[in-house]
Every structure is written in structure tokens, then in C-alpha cells.
Image (cartoon, rainbow, N blue to C red):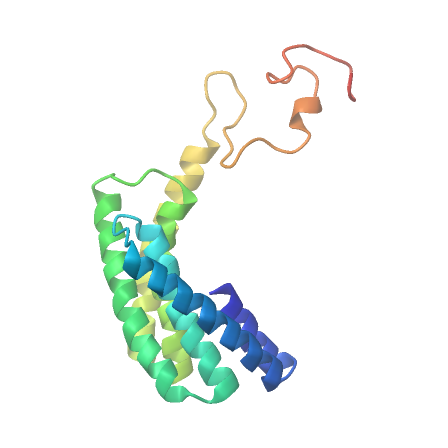
Length: 188
């Protein structure tokens, strides 16, 4: 997805030739990911599938932006949107059943309809785009709130629990639990 978005931006703001070259690289990466996925699919990894659907959608948009391939954009929108709906529905079901822990990757599948909405707007389909947009907005915001709420709770000891580790340099503060001792600012 990142390469495809970069390709679209380069095509618009730098030159179509540069955007086309990056679109070609994105297509090669996509094809290699698809062939690897076909060999060993992991159907339980819903966040990974959501990234794949967003990549399909972004690649179609880049192909249209840089090469004028509106048909490719429409085809990838249909395929990517259908896959996004499947991934979205599976993850919504898992969230309702509390089978997804409160971590950021667990919310990623709920954002995939937003990418489909963006492509719908580019292709001039306001109704499905609006449905995708509001479906994503109404589910992802509460899910993100759940993640932030669980990440921001303070354990009995007092320090907030942070997702992804501790703040840089926090261990240098006096009395930090990872140092095991008190010291006077700075490094001992």
C-alpha cells in the first residue's frame, strides 16, 4: 500500500514517469506477496489480509493516476472492496465476541473500508463510498478507544502501561523500576 500511495503522489507532484516506475515496483511487490500467500495462506491472520486488501485498492488507484488505467482501478476497487468487506465482517464478529485483544493491529481490518471509500470517491461512486466511510468510522473509533483505554490504564503501582514499550530515556529518571535504584538525574 505504501509504495502505491507513494507512486500516486509522485505521479501527481513529480512526474508521471517516476510515478509509473514506482507503480511497476509496487505491482512486482504485490505479485510476489500474492504468490507467497497462495503457497501458504494464513486465513486466521485478519490484519495481514486487511493490509493485502488495502494494497489492492491503492495499487489500482496508482495505476489509474499514473497510467490512466481506469478499468484496472475499477476492477481493483471491486475486488479490494469485496475483500475489505469480508475482512471487516470477520474482525467485527471477532471484536464483538472479544476474541481480539486490545492492540492496534486488531483495529486495522476496521479501517479497510475507509480505503475502499477513498477509491469509490475517486471513481465517482458516492453511495458505496459513503457506506464504506461510515461503516469504518462507526466501528473503528470505538475499537481505537478500547485500545487506548486498555493501554492507558494505570496498574496498582502507578505508571501507565504503554503499547510498544516504555518511553525513550524513561529508565534514566530517578526511581524508575527498571533501574532498581534511585539516582540523582542523569546517568550513573
